[in-house]
Image (tube, rainbow, N blue to C red):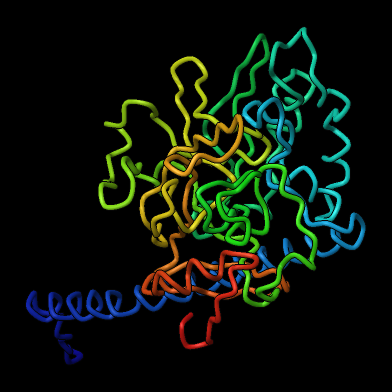
Length: 350
């Protein structure tokens, strides 16, 4: 009879210890994996802004001005097209550019006071998402809100996570309260390079403004020291927050049950000229502007925001891209957003 050999199996305690060790190793590994993924997404976000920077300079070489964020309509309230339309041919989107009918940008009694963007002829373009204008940390797909207006409807509007810099003035449209504190762009603001007297490397041209409800659970109400962040689902004038890149709007917009806030111009001050911190909750756009600037009032625009830990990416007018931290002091932050404020900003203030 052959001798038998017995094999000792794992005891329950040993098995539990092994499982616990594996669990600890996974727990230690996950943050590293998530950090590596975020680093890759942040690098892609930086590259997106660099591509936008190249497009801005190619546009300037062709047109001798930088694009306006919004082309104004009557009283700069009912807008025409946006700066994203202008950039399309310079980001390899000539076909999408050709989809839009720019001949409908003039006033037509048939459409009342509403200008080109709001006509049925633009719906194909308004629903076409361009991936370059999305930050992968925030999302990789387009918006979730549809639009409808005077007989036309689209299921989803194209959105953006990057916005034009409107500066640190109370207004983003001429006449300004202080023209030297305006931004590179705005409503009917076509800047020449020579007007950026603070220096191209010291002036923000574009910045992140993460869109979508998940990135904007709060909406700002009140101004200056009275500003508070109100949960979006409790905000009486909106139930969705996003930045529609092809919708040139200066007011809060409503489509049926959808009440949408957001915008494509970011500022570093509120409508009263008080500091508007990076990654604070965003205002609902209300940039109606019918006449001369009134010192006690201004235009309400969103701020700059991102989902990157600690700060946000910014494109400067020289084409460089830098990461500004949430802890940046108010004075240099506002100074970086102006074209001719005359401020001196040192490297260690960023």
